[in-house]
Image (tube, rainbow, N blue to C red; front, side, top):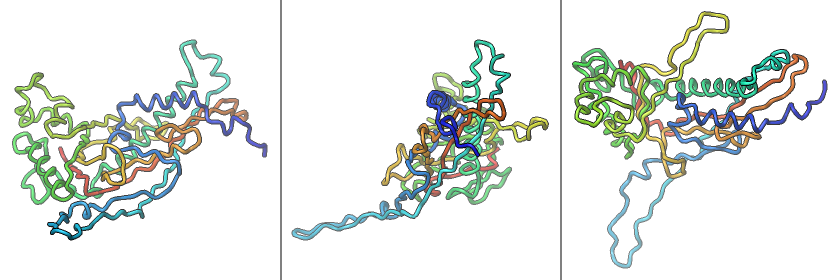
Length: 325
């Protein structure tokens, strides 16, 4: 077995920079925007989670002259762990194809963007599986056709009987009562977003605004969240060679959550994304690009990798709505 040559282990910095730029400009994906991204030097380690009950007790006491003040503090749970799995994909550029490319074509760049897109799409699908479904968060609310009970509500597609604003306000109060925090982010599946844009109760609220029409920013202001995200990523579920089977990655759901503006030991957050930036040559998303020779194939290989872990940190800081429409 021949020993690896330098190209087998060398991370291509220029192509990695192209990958990083592509990650930053890929607005259709929301996985790195909702919850804080925590760069980590080790592939696995522990992280801290604060115990909210220690922060929500009102323990200050009256202090008599010449007596000590009441003491207190908080505990940290350091049993939580992460492990950044490495996802990878490659594109081979055949020696017979490279010399036939037109001057405007840069196959290395195109291959880099393709493998980066594949990695981002994989992370987006994993994000939806990890965070955007029932059974994950502290409270699930289901849309029903009629006669809602408990945490249920009338589906937003029923423009006569549903009230999305009231449903969201109720949920905000529920989280505030349980945690002391209000949701500051909302994720709307595209079909839910389109439904809300035509909802009479929402249109009535904005009819006197300057534009008089529903926009993403206007909905964020209406629901009083700092950031509202609409993930438009599409995935083809069909295997290669089969008839195309494309659909939106996110559909029929809505997430309300609190995301810390920046990760901190004393700042709660519904979720974190740990990115392994300590991976040799990796960018902020734990992504890196290698270019090396595959002589037995007569090709140059462009290989992309991304190392990350998606973690639910505080499930009571998230509320998921399903069967919304």
